[in-house]
Length: 230
Ligand SMILES: O=C(O)CCC(=O)C(=O)O
Ligand SMILES: [Fe+2]
Image 1 (tube, protein in one colour):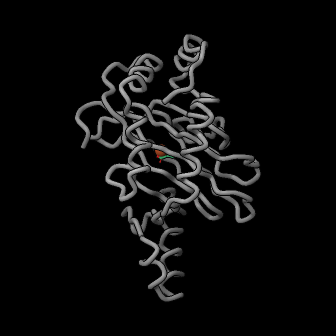
Image 2 (cartoon, helix red, strand yellow; image 1 turned 90 degrees about the horizontal axis):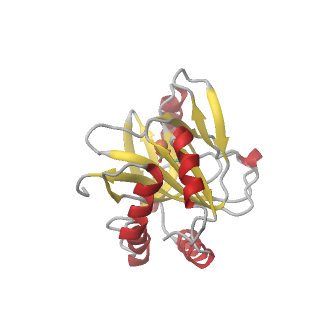
Image 3 (cartoon, protein in one colour; image 1 turned 135 degrees about the vertical axis):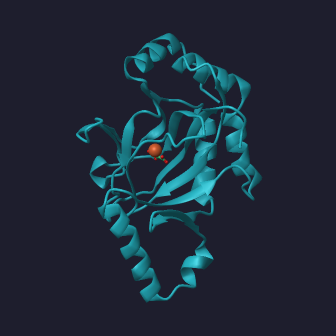
């Protein structure tokens, strides 16, 4: 999956500093364009947290709601988010997608040479596979501060393949990192063909995408994991 490059040793050293790496020019340009094309035309469900529960709502689910139900839904999402736990974005799970081309993206990420490169880069030798979903953040979308290490899933490295052209940082949607005590650290803006990878111990969020965002924030995101695919 990766574009050929000469600087893998340097990237490995950069990852080792803080178990994080932002890799520009990650994919061959034509592949990045292909995946971008798929994401631009894909169908998405609305992923949200309501009363502490993750929910995926299809287009039909939302259009069959009354305006009052929709208002209540957003109120519920904001209630959780206001307490520091919530999300709202468009997602499309790649595994089991009804679109074989979307499944094909996951197959590329799971190509043996890609996984070998990630093991080499991160020094995490027990990575066996990756899961993945396409995500689209539009105005009003967000993902509050969290860590990606629920028990039992053997997640090792979180990845975000950012496929967003001409993003203005004022539009939000920043991948924001935090100290363990909640103080904000640095933030990585969406960009074109950039693969962000970080150890799941890092606390992070996706900041609120402003109503005046002039583009969709498109990514393929998931985790490199150990163990058997589930
Ligand atoms: O889209 C991103 O930048 C990060 C997504 C994320 O943190 C997650 O899905 O857990
Ligand atoms: Fe995350």
